Image (cartoon, rainbow, N blue to C red; front, side, top):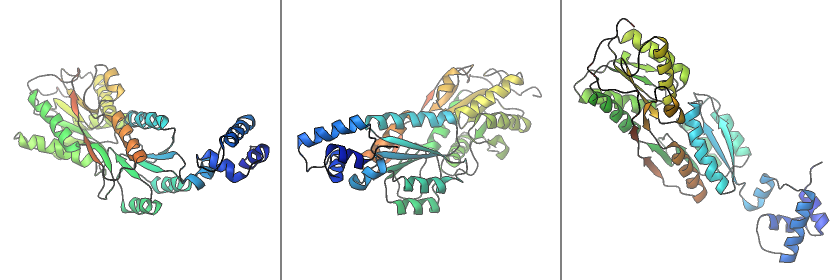
Amino acid sequence: MSVTIKDVAKQANVSVATVSRILNNLPGYSEETKQKVVKVIDELGYQPNAIARGLISKKTNTMGVLLPKVSDLFASEILAGIEDVAHEFDHSVIICKTDKDGTRTMKYLQTLREKQVDGIIIVSEYITKEYYDMLTRMNIPVVLVATQSNYDIPCIKVDDFKASYEAVTYLLDKGHIHIGMISGTRSDKMTTTPRVHGYRQALIDSGLPFTENAVAYGDFGFQSGIECMQQLLSHQKHLTAVFCASDEMAIGALSYLYKQGIKVPEQISLLGYDNTATAQKAIPPLTTIEQPLYKMGRRAFEVLIKGERKVNLIYPHRIIERDTVTNREPIALLNK
């Protein structure tokens, strides 16, 4: 049977209220009483219940993190930043993985409400009015990472339009004019839409046409990279470069090209997005757009812990050059 706060109070010969004040660093007891209670807690192995402590302190020292089923490597980089700074502040993190279309989001928001978390970090998810109304009722700090909303919610992200535009411009500067795109989820208005628009605008500004079948929509994951690469090659016989909206999709595309005997970058250049650990480990190592995911995760937790309410941070991105993009004159694929 677990030890309760009443057991501690009885053993230390003090009131339950005194034990609670000591646990929550509130005044109203002597140093001698504190030492006695601490000793009893150690002897009994008492573990304070976070919710019970929160009744007095109004804090549970717990934050919730919601993220959809996106690239696991993308998520792990952000979570590493969140959990490292949470540890520094002696906080716990509850991680809730929603489905890729957010179907479990309301259920998890209700769970986090019941757990009385002190704040919520929402990663790469579109904020619907239903979500916003629930968050408003919860009345706790919220910060968005790698997304933004139509509501007054702090956010931390990169400029997806600009990053995509510069990615395609980079390929254009390398001599590519037949450039395809493997994009994220079509319904993702906050990430996919600006990246596709950046791709489109870069082509138009260079005097090149934009065609709908030069964009294949995946789900940011490895398998969708394979499927999208196959789809692109069936419609675009003259491709010499492909911009992928995540590293995992780029690695999927790389795998498909390898199995088809199409050389990267000699026949097709590939450019990823995120600069996750897999980009450097790929063969050949992947040229990619870096967004500082770890730093974004850390900063998100700091926003919550410091109670910052008016934060809209656009982190810088940059192109990390490795071995999957080459200078070349456009050539047609030979019936691949």
